[in-house]
Image 1: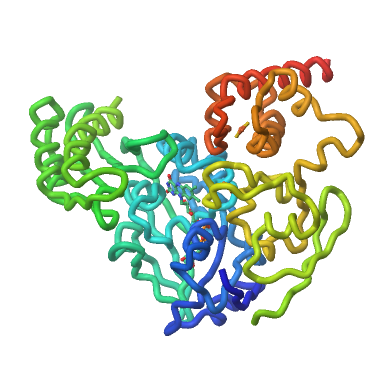
Image 2: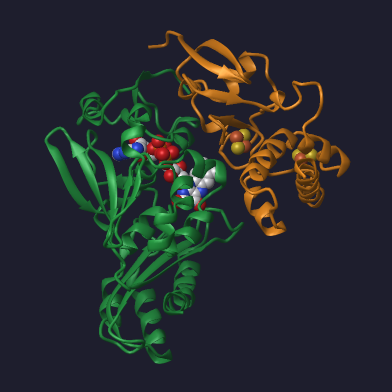
Length: 285
Length: 160
Ligand SMILES: Cc1cc2nc3c(=O)[nH]c(=O)nc-3n(C[C@H](O)[C@H](O)[C@H](O)COP(=O)(O)OP(=O)(O)OC[C@H]3O[C@@H](n4cnc5c(N)ncnc54)[C@H](O)[C@@H]3O)c2cc1C
Ligand code: FES
Ligand code: FES
């Protein structure tokens, strides 16, 4: 690694002003775990890092709304989210998903903003939050805009965020009785990077009839993706073995798979075929 | 840009300062100050050999910029026996024979301290889960798990 300029702004606004819309060698740094992994081998050579440490106090709260929603400051650590009673009570699916997200030291340091902004398709928080229909509030030089997590990603390490925009907060809407499940399938150890991860959120009309569905896929593809055709197959349908079979075939045909160190495209397709019915069953159990 | 910067922090309970380069990580900072208990092995956050506590939270020193500890409190493995006696966790690792070469041991010991502080009576599953980010190339895992249980028992007796 080679030296770089380091600044520690005291407000989010000041942080935005120290970033540069046209210069991608100037980056914000929150936990630094992802950036360090890229800086050490020289994949990323910063000219300046804008530390968000001094604004942590203002952006690290986890607040549960009376309606069952959740607001999470961008500087909340993943470990704090994992331990948060508010998060777990309103969204039981979060705990298990976070517990297998890397190891405890990484979760101690990594921040929600960094986890959502990095854009590595293997990561767990983006598909988990997209499944839950979460949005992020993003601050830039011209003010604040609101982006659905599912719309954040364009491709490998590419997001719709401008170089001088910062995630300030994530807002997870209430489940309102919807059922959610998230699965991470690893080909080596349990806390490894996934070969495939997947979330489903099902609103039920009655015990067996689905009113609305979200099906989100990560890791297997180039970016976090909602499987729209599969969702429409589920919408209004009665859950039975026939439906689960049709849905898993549809998802395997619809998703675009990428081979990598964690599995070939064909293997990931097979994983999706097997695990989607299991994830749906887990959500409904 | 390549000029050194001075950071001030608390190191093992005492005020410390160091002139560092922006790109140095926490392990490099500690080595500069003569503390070699935290070592960089994988360099990728996977193995835990570089475990250090920052404001009493366990971090991988290999992925933590030295600049980031400015104003914070850093605790290393060297702090545990500063009183002249080994900590109950260190003692338990010896009694259980929980190492061969010892390269991974400082990380496992610090992580065990953190685990037992948060969860004084962990199940085997909880122990294995908490230590999943620490690797031992000598594969002393069964003895390490035993050492954690032994330390939990000793600490419980000391409290009683
Ligand atoms: C050993 C290891 C194993 C891992 N395994 C997993 C895993 O199994 N699953 C998983 O999901 N992840 C895994 N990770 C990745 C980890 O989740 C990320 O490194 C972490 O979430 C990034 O957060 P950070 O705060 O450290 O980000 P940083 O490194 O600080 O930043 C990451 C990116 O986000 C940008 N950024 C940071 N904060 C903001 C903000 N507020 N607004 C806009 N942009 C911002 C930075 O400029 C940078 O581009 C692993 C990491 C390691 C080291
Ligand atoms: S050297 Fe830091 S975790 Fe392996
Ligand atoms: S004792 Fe040798 S690496 Fe663990």
